[in-house]
Image 1 (tube, rainbow, N blue to C red):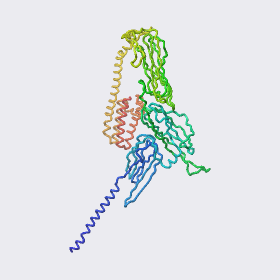
Image 2: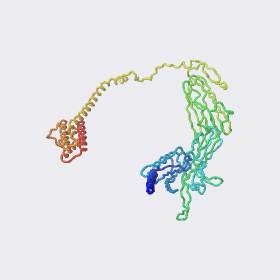
Image 3: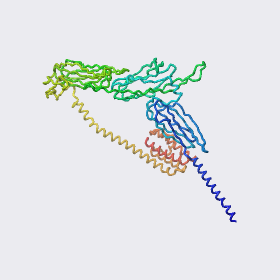
Length: 602
């Protein structure tokens, strides 16, 4: 008997294990059901040149719907979206992936943010994280597909620099040429990115008409067109980089298709081209032989100083002009200051530039015009002025000197005693210096000048009239303000009275909201009582036509009159038709509003 009982004991143990196994299975299934969905965004590169391409993929590990891509500001879509599904089974486990793929080309340099994409899985919306992309200047070897590379064969964008080792502030130019082989046809082109010439003063040269010219590239006959020219003046020494120009060119690519006449058909492919980065080694100007007054002029120039008068009276003006003309960095240096006698009053010069910029650099003239007023009569000399510049052709400094200018001042105050002294230890040229301290004694500091036959406004009758007029207006302003305040107070009193009237006449009706018959009887009675009190209408005259006539004659608006009559109609109809509490509340509020409006208008 004991053995039989022992044999029966294992059955409850097996049942308990089965329950535990079933519980674990349900737990695992529920975990897999509520597992987090993965939705990610991936970019092929985080940093790329403006002449390269970018691939962006959005991946989700569940079969979702309503995919919404982000905005791709700063990127031009050239392909996509392409959808791809993949499902794998490994060790009894299934994995599923759905991918949306896009292909882009950058439109500008700088930081670009790809926003959040959205997708719905089992009714829940999932979003990707934003992606930061940095677009740099064009690279020399861009990433591209084989088809695109073949489409661009026979097309080359080249940057040519006129001089690779210029001096500081010496003018050079860079020209961008697009070379085309005889077998290549293009439809159109557009610039992708303008190069930035850091370390240079730059100016683009306008090309009015593009001309296709014959030339060579790599020893082979090519056609080429000059797309852009830019004049450059280096502003610092050392190696400076000239960034490449980038273009998007529509290229015709032959296909295997033929037209009706057997001729080959072509497809148009967008291809990006960039000129290689060029480096310029800027040489510093030599220190040996540099003049003391050198101001940075580089080129080949002429210099002169001229005046419009040489014979004049004291206290009258003349103009002295210093002028530099030639070719070089005309806009990038200052002219030397004029040395004038101390008895001359000299004003700040007026600078004038007459410069045109071509592929050979700046050409033209630069001048400064001084207005000068001599104070005393006598004979004066404007000493020669020196102008120094560096000539890149001769690789040396050159100094030009203007001629002295004699000025004769005829009439005017007599000048004090003057001593002829040297302008400096290094210069032997004399300069007029006034030694007297009473230089300006002849000027009368207290004057009482008046124009002849001119009426004086100050202390005239018109002056005193305008002076006292604001004070005379003060009483009238006070009286006008009191009248205005009285009218405002009267309006406020009428508004308060209307509100009190509404509360007084409608208080009984408000208490009976919910009881349709009693409410509308009270409301109708309140409206009649108000008409009696406000418009003096007797009970026998409480007819719609009479009420309308009285309201219009008293100045009530058409809208207010119509609302009041409509309320009376509602009171009459409510006796025969059932009405809900909400309608009663609306009619009560409308009655209060109408009574207030009538009291304001009438």
